[in-house]
Image 1 (cartoon, rainbow, N blue to C red):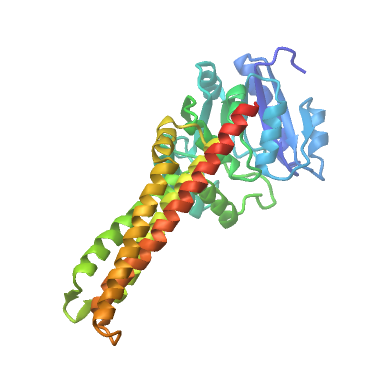
Image 2 (image 1 turned 90 degrees about the vertical axis):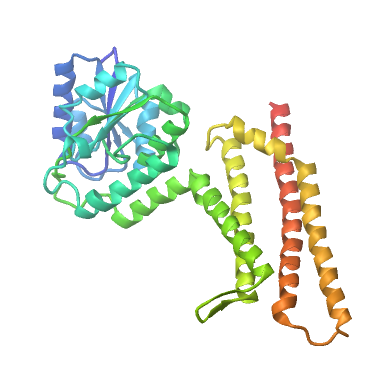
Length: 390
């Protein structure tokens, strides 16, 4: 075992006896070629074949990880690695551990995360399914760049290098395949220094099927990207719905919309008002999600968001909610007066519902603003209490 460990070459393993030995030998050649102090660490996730015996026969260090999942294995490997830098990759011969010089150079230059990019390096024939290569990976990587302002072109490359302490500091915790996305997302959110190097992807040399499940793991990646970007999941759709609902409701309150043989009347007004109300729920859920994420270390602190929460405040929320609520009550009284003047008889629905629908929704919205203001204040009180007890 190497005493002066600068690098750890980490390989997750689950029944990889067909390819693990070749990966270890390639890594050993790379260590010698680059003249680095390094260890080879195999994080085994319960292999029942000869994988562990092969690794130990080649003097690789083996740790056993009981919690199942790709993320669990890599997380344990990162925690137990002895090197300042870690280069990790799959142990199925899909990546050449003999060609990691660029990763070594970039990590020594001070980068916290060095990602391989298979689209720049090359994807050998049969190395990646058509759906993954032309649909899944490009779309998920595009969403990652869009949501998190990242420049990474390949979010899911299995060969990557990290500064161990920098990665430990951002507290990665997902257990499954989405760990690959979590690493890039949290590194971007925490403004770590990230770069990419071209990487060649080779066909998997195992005779059995891979652990990756296309639709299941693809959904887990997408779900993670959405959850960690409450702006795109809640705020932007909510603002769109509010704007759309407000414009249509305002027009329909004044008069119905007619074109060709289509008349949009109070029935459409009911839907557009509902659209506005749902949009409001989306925006408030964004506030709660963002606040919860920051408080629990899932999202990095944001001074702009903290100022927004302080600006909203309980008193302002109560005043705004009360104003909206009383406006709804006033409209309801006006509608009742109109009905009274008609002798409580039949009314013209097209005319009267233009008063009643806004009145009902303003009452609901006002009460919701009041309740949400109290809830945010409760969260804030809890945060301050936690700070005082530390």
